[in-house]
Length: 391
Image (cartoon, rainbow, N blue to C red; front, side, top):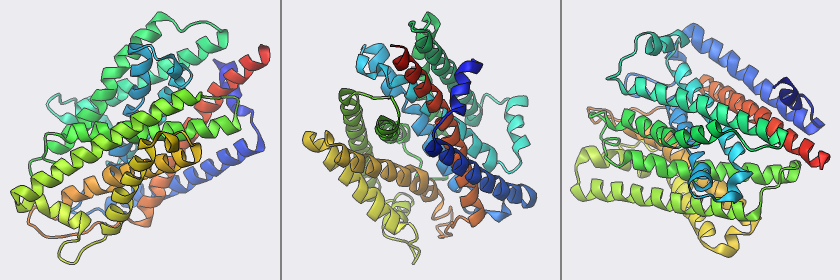
């Protein structure tokens, strides 16, 4: 194992420059978190009316990115689509980094990290958050085992052990469960009408299967330029089709919510959408994001991905994938959580504005996730480079 890990300590100036930049961002994030730890969550923009802010929004989004690993695993393991054979390790490692980021946001949102142990030391099976922690922890462990065993087998030039295939099948329902249970955290709250919908879990999965594979393709294209890892065009095109159908499904589900809310004309259902897309009582902080980013970018991405000629043009493909990823982030990583709290239960608009401390803490957590992902991908590509040199 140590000889495999050593590959993370050998790299070009560009690699080390990237690592140093991430470490600097982590340092900034840790300093901001120390301020929050010392003074409490009062240094954030959260309040009595909006007690879930960007931390929980990022947790929700990255649980989805983690769950997307299944969109590589299902075609490979259930349908024997061998084109995904080279990509599956990178999908597993992306899931590992994403689950880690999601769990860190939960710890940070709790204020004192020791409160996390209450979930473990005093388990409450009737609480959804307990099952969310169980599902996320299980998924993290399973993906670490699968990814590491697959890298080891590839280095030895042998097929992965049978238990790896068994765990790969176990990971598929786990991936579905982590985002379904997360959706239950939201839609189980009767006082939050924006979340109180039976298709919230389906919406979560649809956006996850769009954003996660979009990020994976972008990373694969970057690695094609910077490393010996050359994912085939057929695998990229297949993943791009998955992104296309998933984002269309997500938009369709969202339009169903819009129709149901406005046709029934129940204020509790329409007010959150009015606040997000038109502003309410003079408050319109999120309107530019929801229209110019979520709506425009989602349809731009769909338009580029639907046309085969544009989808196979990698410049147009990158524009489409970045558009889809940002649109999904704004939808789930911003609008969904805040739309559930604004207006509040009394119909009053109390807006949430994240503080600089929150933004810097988020920067640090993102950097931790990117550093873990960088190290894991460096090891995987290092093994493949070693094999290529031996041949």
